[in-house]
Image (cartoon, rainbow, N blue to C red):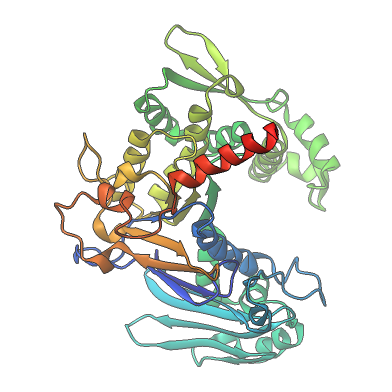
Length: 443
């Protein structure tokens, strides 16, 4: 669970800003399951999610994929030349496996300046490691701080995070917080440009018990779909001899060879399972959507809204079940307001959200603030705003700063500009621009 995220000097966020997912009104919850971020176009709300993604990507990739000597691929605030000389900072506080952690780092264009990881297993701060430049100091509870620690210090590059190196090196004390960044964060955009056919098919293949729930959610969205079928690619129903031949080509055979595998049913079954999983990942699955009349449709024959909803559901169901944070930029891109509201309701329902998953999204959909025909969608402490000032720097602030009352019409107040974070549009500017253009054409 994400408790807070703080960043500074990243894209339009020149100064440090912090998103808090701690309840203000409902004190019976440890963290909020939903956070909605509103703002005008180009205000920087997408950059907030981009900052969290940069942090996760740095943990996942900086040691293995960032080129040695290639510096840090950060994106500091561009409208102030002095910002290039200042570090970018990223800090997250989260809960993984029942333990609270604080992890953060500061980087410039060339190197990691500082990095730290603390845990609070018994509500008392415990240092796991503290880094300043190339010097890493381990906490007393890190068992690998001895000989293995010296090796890690030698391997650490200036432009790589130590947590990224620790994950690659299997440092036991650091695996849990690292897992949060590598497995618990899921990033999606509202246009859903990924290969949804393969994604949905693989999800159903790996989670056959979730087929009924996924179909029910598609049916509930009123798209006219009654079932989803997955056609497995041809060739997966093979004999053991065929599996062994493919395994040999894939260099999956153990050194003992084919003869010993044939005499060991357990080892053979395990190998066949691995080969089938590899083929499934490589093969392009086909899913078909059955409509009421029994007609089967390809996914690309469906509407953008259907594709967007169906492409989102595997991540939604997994995070509701297993926990984690689903971030969606422009969630209203292809979804109707009522459907977006139902998605939010899933995360706010403790029974549906058994894994304590969280939904963090950006949107322009003001109807979610005060739905006319439905119950409350967003709690007052689940709403945040991003506004860009005259210098081009973005500021993040919560609706709770305005101390709204439950009976307030939040949609009307927001669109009236009482909370800021709306575009300043003047009708005469639009009219004059068109009139001037017409006059120029006629001259």
